[in-house]
Image 1 (cartoon, one colour):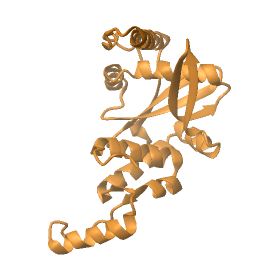
Image 2 (image 1 turned 90 degrees about the vertical axis):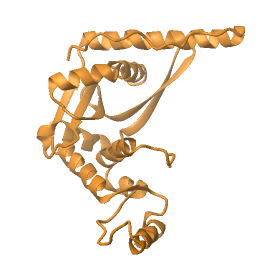
Image 3 (image 1 turned 30 degrees about the vertical axis):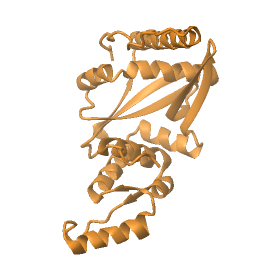
Length: 234
């Protein structure tokens, strides 16, 4: 179980991924959704009722309040009803190709990537779920640049290409207030965006190499983050 310090946003994202990618059974083992209490949780009686529920029903699982649980289920339904991404996620789940890791090595540096889902579409199509305030092309472009999605995409593509062969990377943006598949959008990064991401990835690897070498020489090394990325051309 993750540390108790996990933020509500991280808990929501993790629960959304689990329910959408791995299904009800896995979700039920890891999360407990509180009922909509009829008693005021601020009263003595309300506190007792909730404490008993946590003890006997939650049993150590991560707890979502009723509103959050409903929101997670709503977004799951939006994604799975999408005509392109829904069938592929269900296929990946049926083949146990969800939440899997790939490992590879570059110049002696061990690397790992955790894939949300992947399917065989004549090549390995990697599916990466992202929640978003606005999944429109313009808004998501700027969010992708700010959050360095092209860097993570380059990392995933490097790992999948090394271990599984030709790869296509698809970002699935899901609006947090979506009520239908209309709030879900699928994007592929352009070649230029992926090349920029790979450039940043190589910068990270170079800093790791410098750090490893400096450790043996007993020197300090600048671990500054790679330079600001150029705007994505989505």
